[in-house]
Picture 1 (spheres, rainbow, N blue to C red):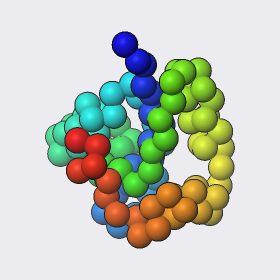
Picture 2: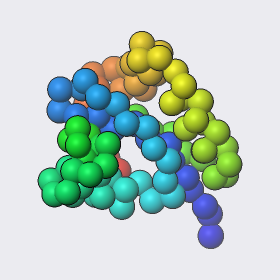
Picture 3: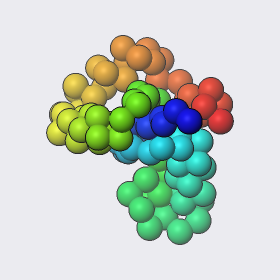
Picture 4: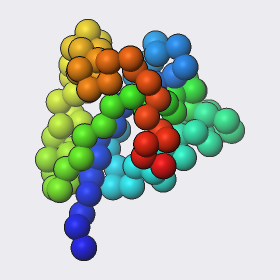
Length: 99
């Protein structure tokens, strides 16, 4: 069975907050972010209503995915915006493509 790991960037409806994460099940993780934003709001993504997927990358190795996540988290906002815009020029919500 092939292992798949994802780094992803989600945002709020105003596109003002970015959350970067890593997971082996992106569909499940997006659902968790959505339900957290609707309920407890204890996490960062929940507190800021971040559940709109705007960027993702897929990896075969968890170590590579984690390294990429750590790298992206160190980037400034402009560099992250450029990455998202290159992948998804209109910043459309990609959740329906994944789920």
